[in-house]
Length: 367
Image (cartoon, rainbow, N blue to C red; front, side, top):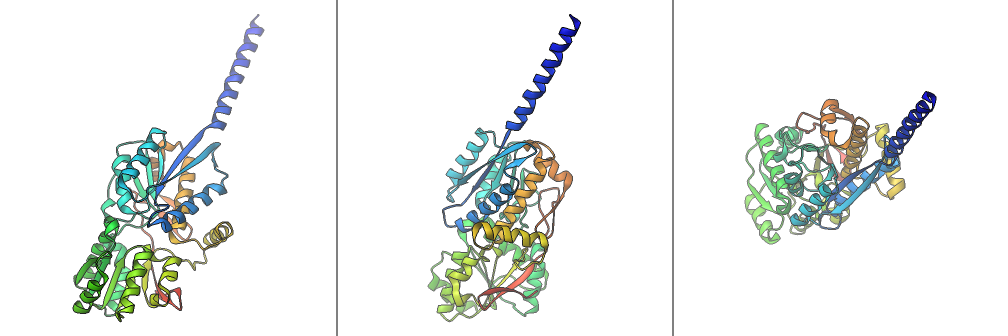
């Protein structure tokens, strides 16, 4: 009789183990992506989506016997729609959110996500300094727009003897663009330069913008806008015989910028924490896989979306999706495509910057 009871107990234990095993096999982790996929900034959103898909495809959408389900949502640069998407993610039990494309929309998502201690949000592009040194649920692989980030760029400009700076920004992503110019100015002053002569939005009447630049006579124009708007402004300036040196933020440094500006982009300079000509083996292998899949070169934001996806994958191997923040802060360092990605206690990173100039229709490294 005892043997019979023992056999039943063993069978029950085996049955329990099998049930737990199959439950684990069937466990799914949902990851939400929210960003501009069809609106004005879709060139960034689609590049990021491509980077995310490539990373998870490489692990066959499986991490530690857990199936990964990606949900891509288009915020259409609409605040109320963005709120609805994030709240829908929360209702579905999603703990990991990738987004947004712009700092302005990331701010909207964060206003909701930061109310939940088990959530994790990470961005490939939101660089506003407004998010710096905040103990919250938001992380990013893109460097914040602090004055330190601009040090090498403003020194380069000062060494070129550019003294009077005119700033132009996209007012529809002001959390990032105006912040970019403000911190650029702080860095320029700390390197011995002067305050900007003017800050103007990209939606200003372009004829008035031309007149203003003629009147203020700047040595250099710094534009922080998407590739389409930056190209539009530069083309108009050149058509109106404004040949002042132009510098642009990394936001516009895409293939579409070169296509939209044509010869008018010649001489425009960029300062960016990404080198598309890097000989890093890991990066070159990524580029090859990306080009094979999408038939185009990866942009900085496709690359950074891929990087943040590999970070999520690595963290999911260390624990469940509610512990990503804690496990990231414990590890701190992650291998990126071109360098080590090191997070501080606030989820911000420091990376090296390089200066490029458009020459013969291509981005050429100058520093």
